[in-house]
Length: 330
Image 1 (cartoon, one colour):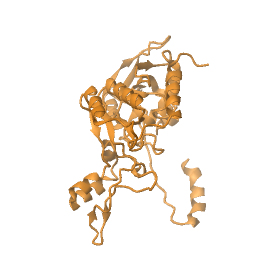
Image 2 (cartoon, rainbow, N blue to C red):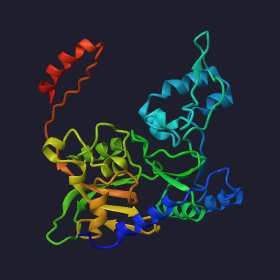
Image 3 (cartoon, rainbow, N blue to C red):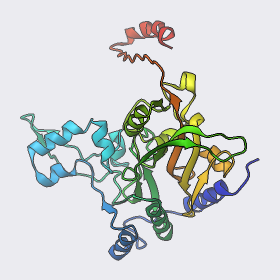
Image 4 (tube, rainbow, N blue to C red):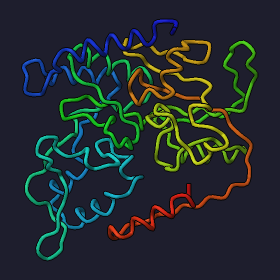
């Protein structure tokens, strides 16, 4: 039986909001410009007006810019640095029509802005988080105005849990970063200090790996350097190429800090808010709280060889060959 009240409090708030229709931009309840200005003032000017990631192509009407945007459109580093872009562009499309704001080639194979640039799933506004108080302010505003919240780190979630709709308020974590290496103890009974690395909010694995390597350690993480360790990756289990001998990402967590739906920032460890600590290690990104940091156990460096292969099936007749190949690579 779970102890404490951290999860219960979050779930009750979530249930209340899910039973009532969220306020939409065409409803009388939608915040006024003065309301948005007040939110912006409360978060030190970090409210951002979001546009579809390819919108500049329509605004500038420049073939060179359209070409550059298209070239970047498949770049994970570029996509994860744009608040309105997702690793799977499908989540930028209109949920009803499927239309996307995307440049197309004309009859001369030049990249041009064709037709309209639908907003699709891009929210009107986002909060570029710099500290935990910005998260609390965003949550309060959304609760007061009954607006849906969407939490986005790098936007790699293939199920779209980091994507909302145009009437959501985005909490964008990629502007809240930092790495710290230390000997860390949870303070729980019997715990001893261990080499550990703390990843702040929107820090990416590329930053984490670089810091751990420089200190002579390895950290269990994902294959993509643009994924955020504290985001949906760890909250969905944390699969890693190192998992076969070091375990999943969730097995490495010593402590979380997070902002709950009631806007309080808490620490969760095996002996402090243990129910929340358990839930954040696999409950799904953004399900129980906005994670502001996660502290992982570090491991000594060791020799490692890796092989990555891609198999493309060109016809149905390739399936028997693929079936014979699977036991060799599994």
